[in-house]
Image (cartoon, rainbow, N blue to C red; front, top):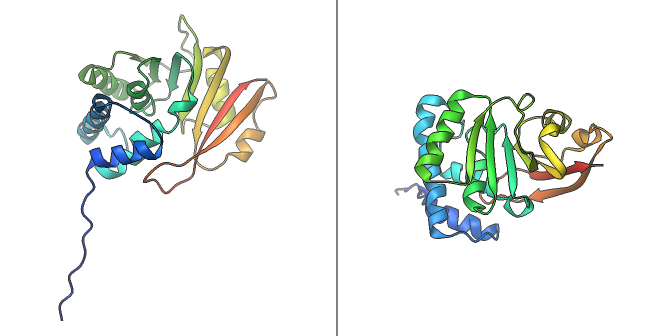
Length: 217
């Protein structure tokens, strides 16, 4: 008797992205989807030299990079959005592709990461995003932001303290977190309040995700 081991066929990234967007109830054009997948290819190429992200598997990258970033799309309402500590452009680049009506600034203090982002935005022709290589606490832009988003940057109190001078009056902090951050919320300064903690279901990602929205009290 012979046994044949079943080998799971690799999932096509384009099909995986399409199914993931449907699960997130996001409608993007074919051109937007093409740019998202091109961004992953650029990230994989540069990652070989610059070590931009620990996730290297293409199938895992669709969920962990693209869909994880895009899951917060509908909750970021501002026309001017700052992605602080953007790293390899996450969530800023996928969000800029998905939200062409908004203006994004991708902020990071790493020269190698911002060099990658400048090149990626140019190749992808993403015209509504710019890159700044500065430390958040010392950067003083001419115009503040209606929304500041971060993905696993720091604890909530530190995130708010590092970036409060960059938030416009009436603006919102949006922190992407894993498990529900009970302790971090309790440690927020009294002048800030959490308006919502939204659970996020990321297609293909077996991990807990939450988006914490914070405003001035």
